[in-house]
Length: 111
Ligand SMILES: [Zn+2]
Image 1 (cartoon, rainbow, N blue to C red):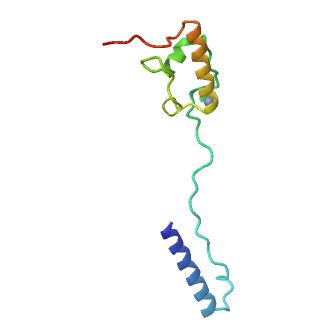
Image 2: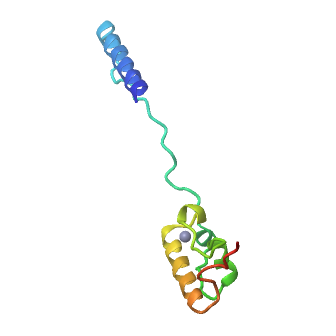
Image 3: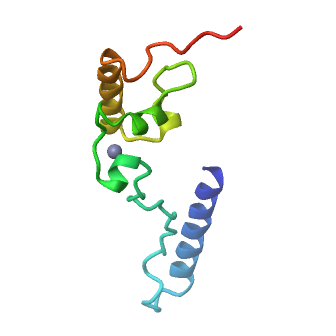
């Protein structure tokens, strides 16, 4: 932040000096703006369902098993890397599969 401000100040000073020193030159009227590099707006979809254009299904247990922990809990979005929409649908599908006894509510406790 500070560096950027300094650079801008320096740029302004030089432009004002150049205008005061040599007012006849028309090329240096406008001070050049320093453009900060922006991150690209579009990212590749990290979401598994968005990239393959599929939807989570409660009957497809092999896929849903990837989104539950060892204890049978639904994994968080930061670990599954799904988009918000598909995380919601996966959670719903897992809950449906649990009711149909396709997935466990709680994994077996081990001592
Ligand atoms: Zn998605």
